[in-house]
Length: 319
Image (cartoon, rainbow, N blue to C red; front, side, top):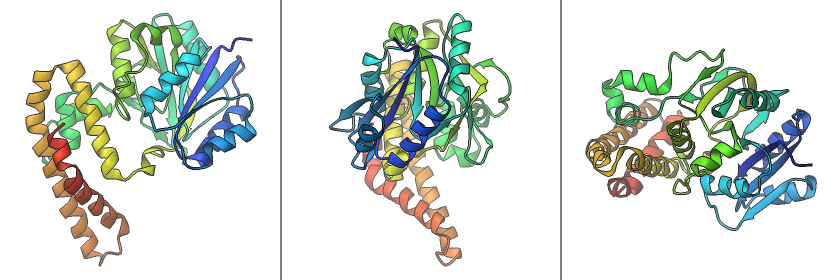
């Protein structure tokens, strides 16, 4: 039987979370036929062995190197048979009817290409997962020294969707990529994920292209999925993930806002970002100093900020 839903999970060195994710799917399976495709990005833990030993019916793609999130999802899409594709992070757990409700919404809503559930934190609170598309101003207000200077506050508020009510079905720009379901034929029309994104911004770019092609994207609150958040990125040092974020961001802007506009933006963004990290380094170190370095979290943050300045400054300027 051809499955109606293909569930795609890209994993990297988080076997513990993958076990919980898979268990939740089989404890709360969709009523429609489904398949699960796991793409392992060269994990060095027990992830591959666990799947092979315990889940014989799961399709497993074993990469010899970490290909990144976008290429791994495209690998799975090539063999996915479902008309609905559920992209799930390994640090998610599904609840009763959460998968069915997304599929039902897509089926009953013509013109819609993709929808996202309400994400729930492990403590039961709502996790914001709806954003506007990134703009030059919103990025300056969020990731540079301008955040401390309170410049472009309105742009940051719009980007973060501060006033968004997570209680009704509504059309959105784009969701967080941790959990989202799409129609396979809509993905094929826009070319699936852009593999130039290794990690970060791949779902932003996908949603931007879907909207540009005339499709709609929706938030569907009657589907709820628990999400831990940043579990995969925590396997790498923070300064490295920050640099990956900036590299993807610049590629996204060059692609959609043009080379020249992005160049002008970079002349402001790059020095303002380095000032931001310098300020955070001094602030966190000073706060750790006042507690005689007993505040380990502040000290660790100061170290990560300092490492970014030491190891990534030139790389950022060359982006």
